[in-house]
Length: 337
Image 1: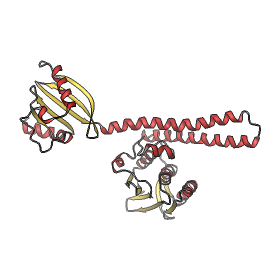
Image 2: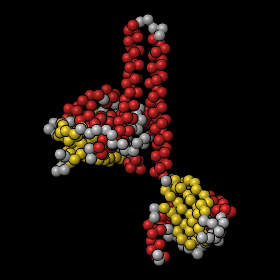
Image 3: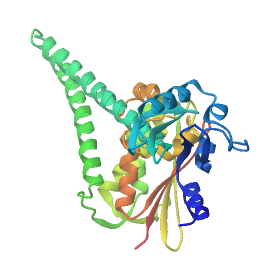
Image 4: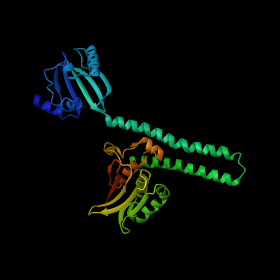
């Protein structure tokens, strides 16, 4: 293998590669490493590591590397995570044939996912603890309550909280089955105009409190080839989010259209919107854009993941367009018969 081909291969890598000799002279830096370390355009060769990397942290780890290397062995000197320019990289330092090789792998998405999992556990704990505390309080109260009407009122409160926990558990089970493709999809041609009206009715009280206008622009004759129960869950999640995360005097619109191959359902709102950097993660399990806001309105961050998996179970897609402060538009794309 010639050196030109090797350089092309290393420059094609999505990991940062830096190679130093034993005197810490820079022998090679690939393009991704230059980008990570903000070295584009700088004259870097024929210089030492310390002349280019004016960073106390890197000085420390290279000094550590020099203490560990043995010229007779190829060894992994160090493996750890570091933060650079708001990203997280896995840092590996090797000693190979009298050269120190530094490898930087971007693990930011994995770190975001791990944090989302931690947030998920916290959110689920909160969503379960709250109704359990209410039910416990109700049971303690009615033990000494003699007024039958009061007992009935308290039991209604407890029942509502039990339903809340039941819904959470059902969401978790539904998502788990969808992810491992165990949930059966029984598709048929249905009309969804009345389904949207029914879901609107379920959230009418919340919408009224915020003076949100809900518009059903689904053509009464519009048909779509889906599992009726699963598609109801999908629509309910999208409409619920559109109402809950909307602004005062906002608008929620549901519309439909089609082309030769696909049927489309669009749920649009004038709500708080989604930051650009969050859009690639919005359908991921556990992910929540604004944890404090989500806790305020309830939920566990499972809704959009369920939407995505239901769409994909129909060999379709869930798409999103959004602008922070100006609202969101979710489009469900389903193949026609």
